[in-house]
Image (tube, rainbow, N blue to C red; front, side):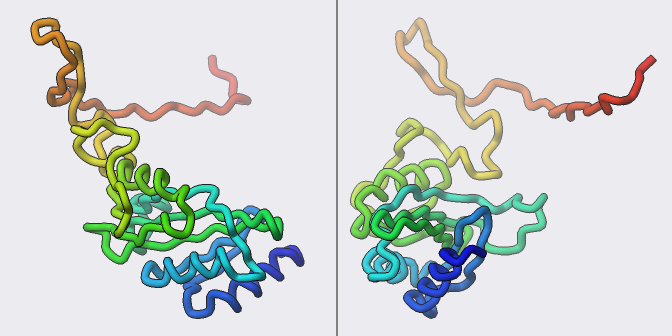
Length: 198
């Protein structure tokens, strides 16, 4: 670990204390796992602490870990991952928190800390079904209002639940149950380029 990352790691441990579940370095960046019940307090400290100053939320996304590691994942299913930037101190950090429940994943909204979280959280709600408590306007962002399900969940069917088509009689677009037959995906055959085939 570089001296800069070691310094940041030490500052994160000091500033966040019990909020840190795990801290690891990967791909030249630190990832801090925090418990969901401490997420609001941790993010407020990350933004305002003099040695951290993460004034910008670059990204917030949902993650479904249900099939992570070829199905060997044993932790909670849903997580929220934040990418933060301190322009003042020229440093970055990744924050990850897991939902307490898989059946109804809920996180506190971060809109009051970083207003840009608004649309990021709406996207995570739309695509993963992750709820954000006290969000000012939590509604779908990318899918249609009548869309059923959350398409980035690992158990969402690849062909979807409904299809839309133009109905010339009604002269409008209509939704109907998917009419595509399920097919087995045939694995691609990878051949050894050096082998001679006769």
